Image 1 (tube, rainbow, N blue to C red):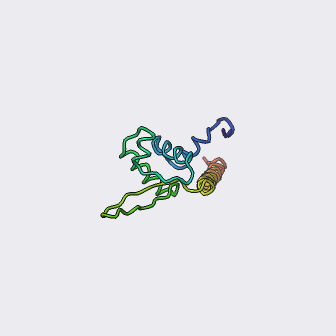
Image 2 (image 1 turned 90 degrees about the horizontal axis):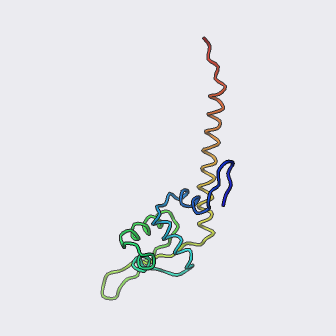
Image 3 (image 1 turned 45 degrees about the vertical axis):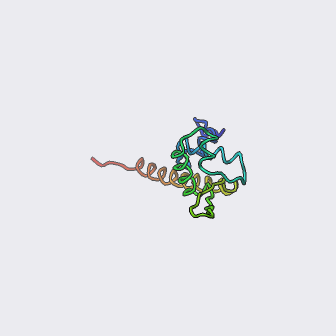
Length: 125
């Protein structure tokens, strides 16, 4: 839990918000975090989480784009292929989230400067 002035945040909520994740994406992330270094197909993830395969495919795609998951293509002997996914190193994910938080802090600082300048405006009649 993170306490910020008048509000407390569950760390899971910070991760969900920081990475802009849906509930399904967060479920996939948490599931793979529990299985370090293990590769999963989207079918396996869908079965484990009782989610629709298309939901898991969208989630895996978005998490891969956000550099949270690694994706590997397995080629089949008779032609064709399938993808497997695993979680990236937890340290890398933490660093990614910290970059997002630092970016947010910088935006808040800029907004506070603008706010302060606006408060110092004196209107002349």
